[in-house]
Length: 150
Image (cartoon, rainbow, N blue to C red):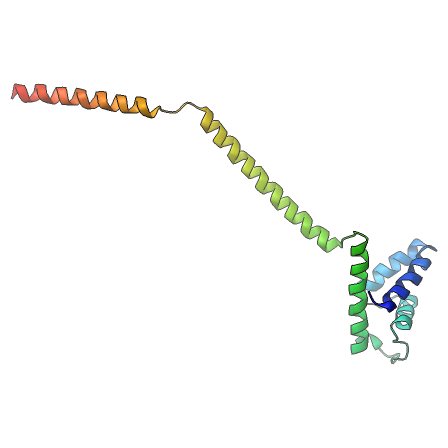
């Protein structure tokens, strides 16, 4: 993580202790493209060395974009270290979990059906051959009787 992020975030966390409103502000600030909350924008400019940029729209400069990208990466890294995940990551994992649960359920149903098939008595191959052999013998005997009559 870069030094500016740590300074910014350290000072911000001290400020957060003063009220929940600031946490709501930073969420709105980040989702709003680092604008909309003047006090956070000023703090950001200070720690990322962007104070001297034009007041007419520093948010559009290459330096601003680089600083914003660095901040977002460090912000994600910081929360990742703490074991937190973003809503997007959580949603993706939740969807994968649902798909896997459905797959497990289908596999359990298949296994259950296969177990039931194994339990039901089927035709004994040896017995089936005996029945077929008896049928062949009977047909042979009938054929021999028919041939003697002719």
